[in-house]
Image 1 (tube, rainbow, N blue to C red):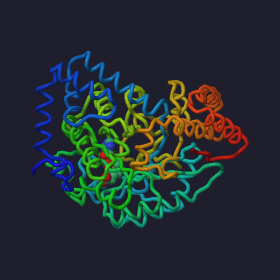
Image 2: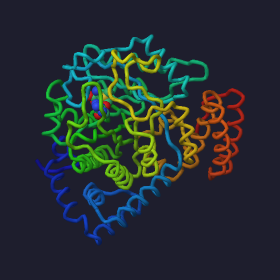
Image 3: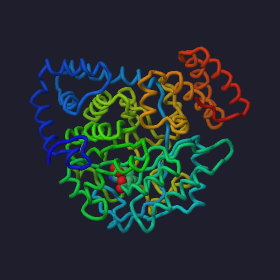
Length: 473
Ligand code: SAM
């Protein structure tokens, strides 16, 4: 197999030999100051790096250079994403699954986990609970089961979710994280109005992938790895990739992730919309210590920083798998989206499960409520954003990328973040959160470059106080 980023074949665009050579090259050059300086100089142009260049930075062990990487990651984060952090929550629809994934408690052989699938009425109740927290953006999660969770079930659930208008609440963007499927099904998801299609590769290492997915449709490495190509052929232009850190060597996964991004860019002219960085967690019958490739917090931070530097235009997502302390550190280095108040059980937002009835996918580390997360973000100087404007205005795929590249984001995303935060403060915030938020909004209006836009925002904020909702640029 030859390496070819523009190929449609998994083993050519995620090429094992190319990854091995990349890792060797990175190891050989990890103390090569001259090369590292050249790579850093290229990275400072903020147009990204190749997987080989980024791999050298990841391996670099020179403390001053590592500091420079972190500093640059912070700068890029600030320049491209400002201090906005987009909020979302996962919604587990069903944990029925026919796969045999060794790291996931939903695997078919797990006979003691409680199996649950939400009815449309139960989805309604979950969504109302999420709306009452203040959420506007969801990520749907299911196991893979063509009988229990067919595409029709997912489509019907999306329709239900978008139709629920409870008080001032609304779910305005539904992202979907379901198993790899056909072009036809991706087309149906697109028609249903989904935002991003998210699918984690789990591991890019084919041999490990096949060992970790011994049975079920997910066993097929190429079908899984080529899923984003089918999704894009089906018309979905925002796709989210990720690996589950802990399964394989992180250096291998890092190179694989960037090669995947390069492949999508080469074939479709636009890279992934987001990269997620989940780490393996304890779960029902899963002990993360049984996996050999767990990574320290230090390495995790470096991975986040190096991704930020390598693909500046790609959003980065962190979930409640990570603790408050860890989330705080990586927010600075490049994370642009976080979940808050999450439940990983099926039906978990309406009522907490009794212990003997556990349906959760993994234990969460950050157990705070959404309001606590919102307040914490603001105290750290971030603007929690409930914005969903881009995809509703048709700014997806390359159109979103051109918005980033044009520098117009400050006149668009920044006001949208402030207006959606204002909605949150009016409708859902605790008094102290509201007080902090109002002060933050007043301060941040001044950071909108165009005066005309500032004026419109002031007018809209006043109207939000009067009960109007859903303003956007
Ligand atoms: N079933 C879908 C598929 O086949 O891709 C994806 C949905 S699954 C509910 C979401 C993700 O959770 C998986 O892709 C996996 O990376 C992650 N996951 C599974 N087990 C986990 C664990 N023990 N700890 C942390 N994340 C886990």
